[in-house]
Image (cartoon, rainbow over all chains, first blue to last red):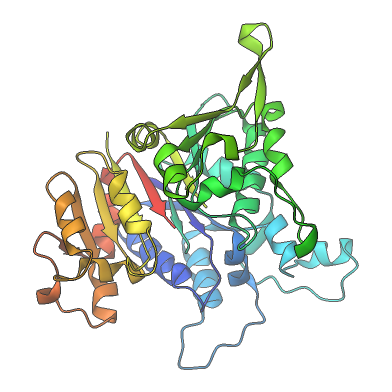
Length: 130
Length: 135
Length: 102
């Protein structure tokens, strides 16, 4: 079965990104497909490669990057939510005249249409938020 | 894209204190382009999103409540509001802004988009969907 | 046709759990995750409200979240079933839709 995932709260403050990670790992292990995870609201903050959590804590961004690489999951960060919160990839940084970008490997910035498309193309949609 | 699914947007949070109401509306507007069967549900504190007379001048935040009145232009014409949620908050339909759409199947007659439903009816609406997005 | 409802808030902080239960149809399932697991405690102020729905709705608690919060199985309402992330995935797959009460 194809499962679409929405993460709508930021890392570390809320458990949403952790619960989603455990859920997706279980789903993949059971043979389900997770073609895409969509990051919305403060969930977009998961995608920054500049976070430096203490070494004895999980690194939420790196966990997602690794899982996405292993299972070819499309990690999509909502562009409107990302721009509000200072998340930029190289192209967006150039376009907006900013001097830095911060999107981690495995994540890509795109539009809200990707969320609707995920709802259309998957069998189930599960949202993790607060 | 030939497949049409029933999309329900569930709004249970008040506007301005958090961004959920605004960013929910942004999804609805973008989603309209996909020509799916779209329904909006307002219950619990979500009913406050539709309150009339919102004036955000003093808080320095954009007033997005007029956008609800434009939803008809996007063919988003089903806004279900839960009666019990209104009553619990001391509100009636008169406290909500008027949102109309032109019914293309009925000689473009103007009709209200907001429909007040009971909690049991809301549960039926929720159970009739393919995709439920909660904000 | 049935729905899996997930709730992630403590019922002592807001109305999400009670609102969810009030909108369930017969045959639906409710899964308490994250802080909602406190809603599964026996003898709490919401226990009666939860039990009142247990006849028509299947109620589950995510065991990993209960364990993380120091809630032992014997503190849970007997009407509630503990499941893991595997069980969570199965519930999503076996119900027609998932509604998340954020």
